[in-house]
Amino acid sequence: MKDPSNEKFSKINLQNNAYITRVGNVIGGNVILKEAGFVEEESFLTMKNPDMSRVAEFLANIERVLTTRG
Image 1 (cartoon, helix red, strand yellow):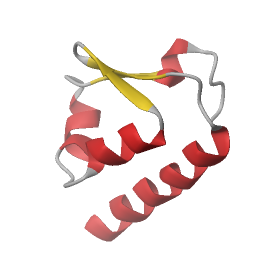
Image 2 (cartoon, rainbow, N blue to C red):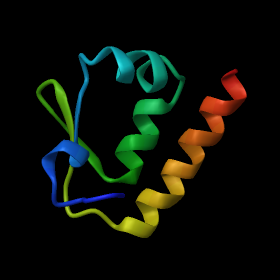
Image 3 (cartoon, one colour):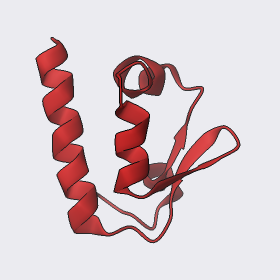
């Protein structure tokens, strides 16, 4: 959301511990990211041509899931 043209914000390393513990281990977490526009490429999820309103919607859903996991 901050800077979609910056690769740092549009590419997720699937081997990253933060991803694994916060999203990768959540049932449906990977599906949500793919529905938001991320595409799996080797060991990364990469955002291609983001629809920022859709990304915002899915980001809100992910944050809701993370806060309910406690």
